[in-house]
Image (cartoon, rainbow, N blue to C red; front, side, top):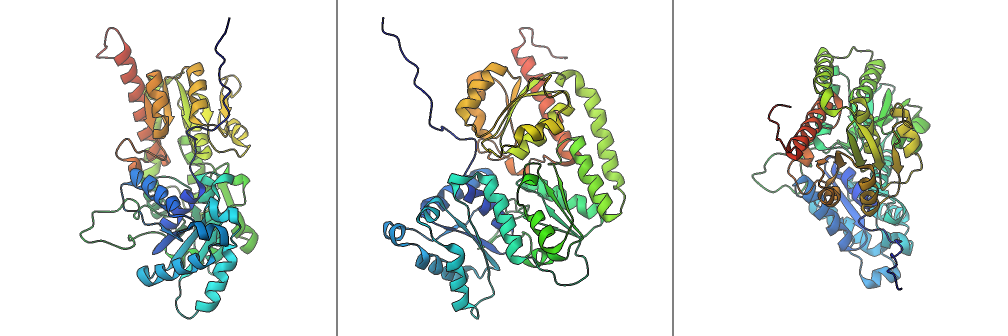
Length: 454
């Protein structure tokens, strides 16, 4: 009897990651008076513009060196120089961040050499800083491109200028504009000087304009990046980032600036580390405002524990976000039954073990380099109470009839993705209320009785 054979699954479908030039473009959007320029075809910059606009709901300009068939064969050096000329004449930027694409990397364009040649012949015509960064998508995710752009910017711009310390260097990573604003508030409340890179709290979540701005106001001033070479210390967020050649590590190697590498401050445990570290470096006590926020959060944990205890979740997204969120979920009594990411650093499980007690007893599955087809197949087996991650998991949640709590990037099927606060005691409070109410609502809706008081 002829039987139907199941087709072997080999191709990646709906990857749990985005391209690395996207991450680099986001960093350059977080630097004052800066234009991102992608060396490749127009399609790459168009795709990224469209994707970022759907999440941030802000105008996103990303220039392109506009490869054609001829350029792809003979090289794009002339196109890149013409693109830089056009940007300087039209925008007069303080900085141009040049990211590569798969095409320009594949044909072997030497972008740093092309830009050195350009600057040699145009040194007196402008004072624009040009930062090249290698971001081929076939060798990384959007997070890899993000961190590579931060490191390239610091490597090009930061200088040792004086013996006077210029505060604390702070590298927040790829979080929401609302998270970046909250970090500003925290450092200001401590009363310490700091240099935060990038800072798209205003450029990607600004007020209504009455007239068009070629480049949105806001972002890290270039002079603050220059001053990073004189800082008293650096703090960078990300347990996976800590395993890489990061910007903080570059400053440590180049200027002997102590580098503090901690996890994303999501939940009480990881947020405590950030506050303790700022207090330790600055010599200043934690402001009473945050002591009170922490105390109210603990009270909320106690009040809502009966609803969330031993619930199960599927967590997916960027590796460091997954680690931070899994730490928070474990802290409030939820089992992160599946932790999945499109990144493949090789460190995800080891880092999760650092933040989750009784990791083996909870039978947590960890998957790297995964796509949403595989996440869906495993999710059905672990039978979660909810999924938590970006909008890309909606199809899985819908098929399983499970709630999806949207966090991270991208969120393009709901409003307010740019305004979610993930970090600090305040972010944990908002996440706790959202998760708890989602669990209550789901149990209420699926109950044959339809409880009013639960």
